Length: 531
Image (cartoon, rainbow, N blue to C red):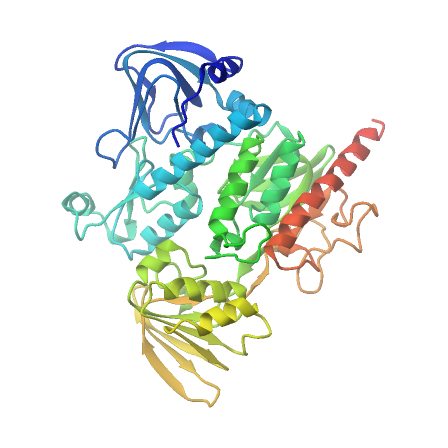
């Protein structure tokens, strides 16, 4: 986390940065402000502090460096860095820092590892980022905490039940305006949307409507991030958009144990966070959350029309929007979304369910992974499925579920009703294969019942879809060497959104790598066409 560079390594870094002197007490970085990326200390000392942490987070002496993963993409600082005594540093901006990571393999590896570990430390300690003020089970609190967690962004929460300052802040504020969010800039938001929060803390910034990217990748799941890594590493100007967070459905997997190269397993979020950081290392821009509403063709390429009225222009488009979660056909289910009904199982949901009984509906691998993960915290997990597990779940997960004493599997079982009020679930009713209905008191329900293709936004694009709504490719490719191309040359579809795709993380990653070769073929053909 805190490497110390040798004199020769500092000499190497001098080729990428510029020397600067900071006087005693002067700030090199302020939380919430944008600035240079990394500071290599040549003399003096830099003290790093942050909101929510007593005392210094780190003290950097000569040979060490200050910075974390945010500065790799030019996002605002999460902490303060202040000179103690006159301090001479080597300053590397974001672009120069990325050059170091790519061109100096061993040195770059040490720096990249330190940047990632420092972000992990901030996340674990709840240091830096916005402060969310509101009760734990408030729908807005859960929504914003989930959003920040899935985007790997540090944050803190003040609970009015045990924090006097939080109670004072919420006095006189209507409940429908809860939670309050205090941004590092000092701005206070009332129950903001995810887009409003993201812009306040600098997660997203305005898109230049005059810039023409080589490729725009819509969707930041495993397929989209794989395409981003390969496109960026091969010198293409690429941007990734997603309406919520990176990782997609894979990011919600508690543990993936059949992904090549990880014999002990890895959480979906950890795997996707690595891919997200890797893409940024190669200069790929991230626009998350930014929702695409429409796609149109232009003379020099394509235009994406965003929900915030911005436009983005690109020579080619890769669609990796995956699928959206299915829900149950219950009239009052939407009233519990975000507070008591969940579509993924992260540490946030596991904490909410501690020592409680929960119900989980589903029979696929994602459902099995979630059931095992929740069982470590919950009093009991009821796993409900219409059919047996053998047809849709991997054997290792079935065996693991059978070995968990607090997981009970009920097949041929359907939920019939939800009871509760004000967004808080009180009981779940279900009917078994014999037609008998039973009522079970519980506050949380998890749904892992599959997904539908996320293609509604393509209605006016002219893209051909299969009868189930997935994007067709093989039958319409304009070039036999480009099997992932759609009926519109220059638009490619990969991952779960593509008709005929294998719904596995490894398959999605493979298509993300494969599509970049086809993208080069298309771009080369376009350049060869006479004006």
